[in-house]
Length: 264
Length: 264
DNA sequence: ATCTAGATTTCATAGAATGAAAGAATATTG
DNA sequence: CAATATTCTTTCATTCTATGAAATCTAGAT
Image 1 (cartoon, rainbow over the protein chains, first blue to last red):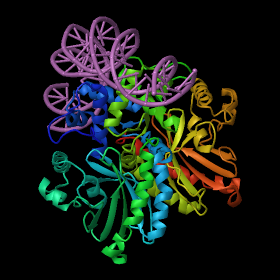
Image 2: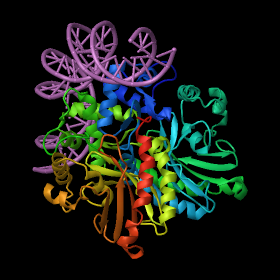
Image 3: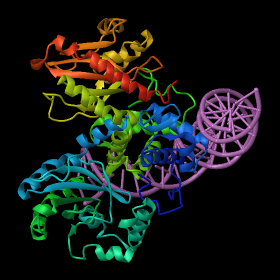
Image 4: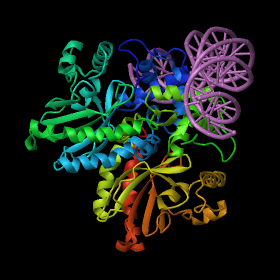
């Protein structure tokens, strides 16, 4: 989580006239997530580049709402995020609609079907239905994954401008995903060719995993959701995976209707 | 989610000198969760009692951070809450420590073991390990439940002052939990007697469910976590449940150490 | 006990947040 | 399809909130 279109490195908030205090609060909140362990006030203030009193005041308000909790002098993400996540999973029209659709795709193909949403320069798994051979024992809902690697990420970049690819690469560097990072040109090479509406990947994001993905079309031309079929290498072939693409296309089409409010 | 100690009905934010814009943003965020469906700008502004421009500006910032998403003219909770929840579940020291402890309790007793945290005037399920007969098919992590009903809620109120009980009742009324609401005196009657460190309930929050709970002690004297054993009525008796209390006490003791930073 | 680093409060000031009102954009109705 | 009503968005002057420097308090270390 960071302002959806902030640029790469040093700049704090490119957004001009926009609620400084709220933006800063969100930065603190994001930093707490990034840290993955309780943080002291001074750590947060330094990491976010703001003064101690300001950071403290932000933390106090977030704590009032349960978004942050405190033990002794250290702060961490609070329990209020759980009902929020639950609300999202239960009520978001796209997620709700996706579940039965993914279910159907999974049954038809016998593969694991997943829905991702783009968030900033990453993607997030928001729904998954397992096929015959589940990929893992835990369900990694909410996991942040790179856009640059894996079929479901790359298909979201297929329609990106050169400028945007530059940002994506910069963000990946900043995020420390060093191994999965290339030059913009190199990245472009790995993306689906123009005219191709799906992406295929093998051993990319995770070794031993094959996947194909299509984007959920959006009128803007820049999709921010994708659906993927995934399988352990043992139980699938490239051809087998690609055979699932028409099914994926159909599913994506159905979902895309949800994104356009009414018909128009 | 609402300021942890706001009073009952009309008053907006009792907190005096505290980051008005941030507080208001959190109100908007809370309202979106409450609504359970996409909301229009004007609905949110009215519900939160703020002007349209202000509400719009808040939504835009939250949207930048993925906490809110928009389709056409309607706003809803955004996908950024998922990584936040995941971060909480994976990194919160209390939750992480609780998992193996609940596991042990569940094995020992064969019952479902749960950890709740108090948030405002509700409690939230933050961890659960099923025993022999699971209660449901879905795992209701993050579910908001009343404090006034069910063993795990009532044990958190056992140490509350009369004034606080009044607030709790008022909040329950405001939240619309009408059926589970009584007068403060009536509520006090239903709470564990002084000297009792556990609560027992039968058919209270959910019919056909028995449960016992103990609070996780806190130095402040006002616990905000509780752990419970729960079972369908078919497979348990009151005595059987209460036999689990010593096990619960031990578990609660272990958890409470986590709440006190260092020893002291 | 003394020192040091961090946390918290105070306070004056800058500038951000605010809502009224005007202006667009949609939706609704005749 | 025109006309009207509603909702959304932008602008802008004013107010009051958010801010950080500095002082104060607290706790941990030496």
